[in-house]
Amino acid sequence: MVNAGDKAGLDGVVSQVRALAGAGIRTAWFPQLLALDALSAIAVAGREVPDIALGTAVVPTWPRHPMVLAGQALTAQAATGGRLVLGVGLSHQLVIEGMMGIPFTKPVRHMREYLTVLQALVNGGTVDFTGETLRAATMVAPVQIPGASPFPILVAALGPAMLRLAGELSEGTLTWMAGRSVVEGRMVPSITEAAAVAGRPAPQVIVGLPVSVTDDVDQARERAARQFAMYGQLSSYRKLLDEEKAEGPADVAIVGDEESVAAQIQGFFDAGAIGFLAGPFGAAPEREATMRLLGQLAQTG
Image 1 (cartoon, rainbow, N blue to C red):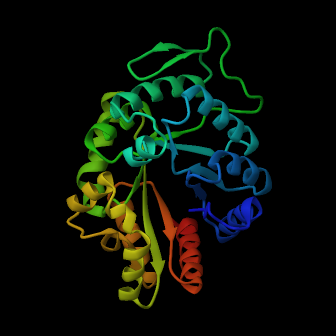
Image 2: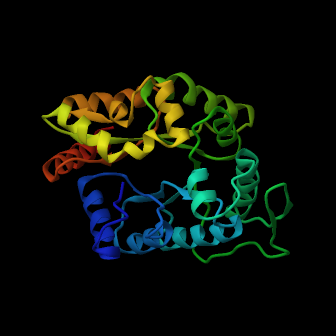
């Protein structure tokens, strides 16, 4: 995952993406925080660095009307020459309602209506839609961006209702803080069944977790407990951790030597994932070792 808080700004982001591509990693994932705009950064980096896919993980839906997001994402798709993967999500009530003042009501209904409009626009259609949570009308002309083409949309879906919705209306899901037993036992079967019922292709399941190649596992878990503590306090992630019977984020972080980390990541592919989103952490040598291993796995996997 790209460090969107890089103090070097866009130049630093481009350097990170270039390093990821040089390591052989197939996709650079950009978080959407309250600073650097992910899609704008993807458009810039995509013009500078070829041969690597660029994805958002994830853009919150509530602050951006789907017509606005469609235009932004199609622009980024054109700028990258067709390498965009758009991850979208609800974010959290604490952020959307508490920080932005936007009512966080009927979230599943909101996402259903949002995806209905967004998919139509991304695939070149027009919309005239009135739902419970949003309205959208393109009148006559679709959203047209020269050089743009449709791209996959993934939904950050953790709970049962959102997973079913993701299977029905999107190309798949991005997870974060979900351990293997939850991914294998509930998430993959649920979204796969929903996609099949909807007549859609098998969904993409991209698993995201903190990763550190290290010789000191105990120290790495202590670091993970501090660095990722907030995820143990947000209700959606807390439910996932409880379901995994994990005390906190440190218990689901992937840490160990190269062989151990490779085996743990492979376990998620065995569980039905088709991609892995790594959040490297640790001291500089550990992050470098993690990057090398991830590049090797991407080339041989």
